[in-house]
Image (cartoon, rainbow, N blue to C red; front, side, top):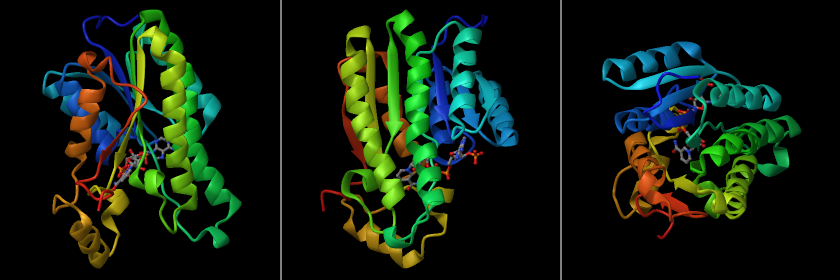
Length: 249
Ligand code: NDP
């Protein structure tokens, strides 16, 4: 059992960089013990040190979330170690873009396993601990591609859209146990994932947005902080589109 009984336990996947790192820093600042999940252990150890230096609490869980059995075991290990799980942020994700007619089965399966199945596996494993505590906040990081579709992203959009159906279903199944489940759909956020997009693409999307700039990881972290807060107990089954007003254009 953990000695840290005062802080809520929050698992954040994809915490080694980008949006997940910003979410982890924000939740730690808000007093959560953050369990940092990704494959690369080095950046997670650095982040843990950064959080602890600022007076926060964190632990490192290096694993590949596309390995369903291994990931489920890892989540169960968190519940055993800390005695509970309060918050789960399914953020880790990858892209393997290409036109649907040329997309390989391998690229389809890898994106679906990493971006969608992993969320189901994590929810199934974490929900048991949440039900025991009659409290839970689950957030699935979807995408505007999952809401509206996006040419060149059949696998990614299908996975991100699937997360929206998963979110509503889990909200209905677990709402009576004090567990909420919501999705956040970011628009264009400046991270490694979007770093290689041509400048004219970035300028084009910025023109479509009401707020004339790309998003930052901290913009998404702020939304996650609210949706996972204790006071957000009446908000469930929703998709919060955090895109600077792009989709409404
Ligand atoms: P990054 O590529 O910057 O980071 C992805 C994170 O996921 C890394 O921490 C990576 O860690 C982790 N990850 C990837 N695959 C695995 C795996 N198999 N097992 C464990 N961890 C894994 O992405 P962003 O921060 O930009 O995106 C975060 C989420 O937000 C994703 O789900 C993405 O789809 C979504 N999103 C992003 C948008 C954007 O504009 N950036 C827009 C809309 C949605 P490691 O490599 O160490 O395993």
